[in-house]
Image (tube, rainbow, N blue to C red; front, side, top):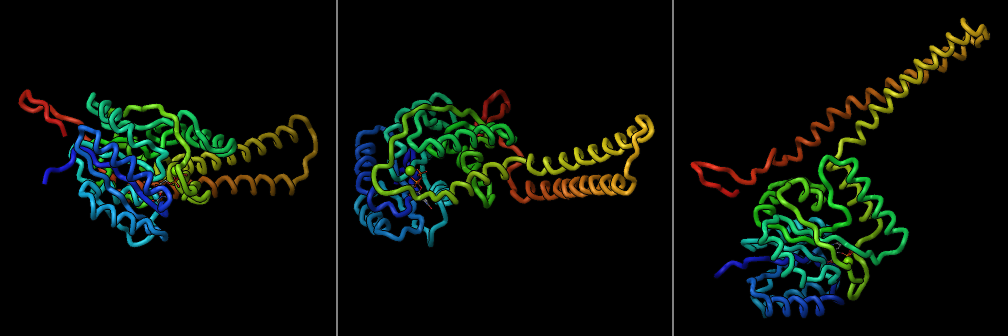
Length: 317
Ligand code: UDP
Ligand code: MG
């Protein structure tokens, strides 16, 4: 059997309402496209009729490749599962099952990929969410951008086309709390953004609770940044400086300005502030070691090679 050029990976969690629309759009795309395609559907432990619908559809159409997870693992892990089994030889595209990520953009993404980008990611031009959520998401992306050690792509979700070599590297990153869009930035290569208007969910309700949104937001910060731990050390140093400043100020008051100071009180304040600072700094130092352990246990590859030149020949990796 010939392997498809591109796999479309779709995680599904309780999507029985959207399923018929999804299949209709995907079938149309596959019928009309001149790229050979497969669809990898991942059932993320749905409690509705999604798995039955997937089964019936896949038994009828060999272009559908289905994965059934044993329970609900969450969107990021469902996508990871899909990426690990997808057979696309050239590229893989991640989309949501609710048609908020129009599959038809594949044609355009594939064209940009062919021009030499390893990642073509979608940038949401208009967000349809409420004002507060929009503001939070906007600020969040900018915060992560500022504090993380990698270049984050603003206003972009997991909707993207990834080259085969990109996915091969991501599959070799065994970290447990996954933040795929961060991982894809971490891997590097050439990444191109593509602006689009994000439509509303076609049917059903969002499967992301606010708690899940926060969890994934924290993953974005803590998996890619040591700033929170460094912050403790810095706080400790600042506190110690304040204690010393207080000490100097008291001496100044007593000997230069000749203002009487309350002896016991000053000593007590000085000691409390100083040792609060020392404790914070100590925590920060322990944190530095934890940080190193943390990044080591992730077992990420140390580097990713793009290509090499050997004997006057360019070898792509
Ligand atoms: N999803 C999943 N597992 C989950 C939650 C969501 O596989 O635990 C899927 C869901 O079926 C959809 C995609 O992830 O295909 C995005 O979810 P949703 O549209 O609910 O998120 P939103 O667009 O509201 O952020
Ligand atoms: Mg959605």
